[in-house]
Image (cartoon, rainbow, N blue to C red):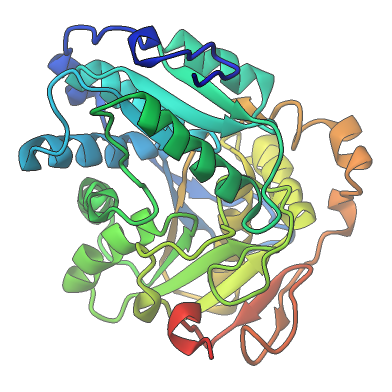
Length: 366
């Protein structure tokens, strides 16, 4: 019998499906576009940021709804059947929203590093949590969560696993985000995207390049992430990066990739909050740092990015001096420009680094 931190004991322990609330789907999207001019860390011409943290369910509500509706259409998800997914938190909010809107109970496999406030918020939205207490020796927290997820699915016959890292519907969910951005801008030269599952970069770049064929795509990864060919290491930053290679990442679409460390991201988040009022978490800080750099080195270029969420989840981490000190993060010593490396496997990036050679690690591995 399966037990977990949320008290999931058996298939019958899952809450019955509540009635679908399809009217909630009308709340997705139509998020504002902000002009960002805060010094990051110095002056720059400015860039545009889509404020997905101000949307209901956050950025990943778009992907969550697309994955569940796609599964319903294919007959993979029966009406009222439970949905089980692994998450570090952000997709969990989106799935909780999608579960309410479409009418499915949601079970989320999380890990011990998930913030207490996020646990309470997910449970408040009706999700059941399974908490993994230790990372796997290979694959870290992600591998440990997937192993627990398989146990949960065994205990819940008929449960559907969206598999966000490899589900094409994840990418399809961001077509609306691309359409909104295209409608808000007259022109776009550079798009900067954080990369975790690979969903929103892949889902946006196709439609946007059909409108602006010369559009450049810059991927932003976390130090310690293996997505673009670096060695996998324990990562403090959540929301971007991965210990596995998601199939949703469209490597050929990227013109370059940057790896950003916690100091650079935290410094950018705090500067955004002080000077532009809008801010967010690790992904927001990382893309803001790179977008400001792109605007600075390409004068006259129109640069845009996506801020996936807001700052509230990170009040006890990014915005807490005790947390940053305990983890050896000094925002005042954050890098002001990236170090250039010739190839993703040439040197391990321990801080902000840039590479104009983008590889698919699974295709280039011996």
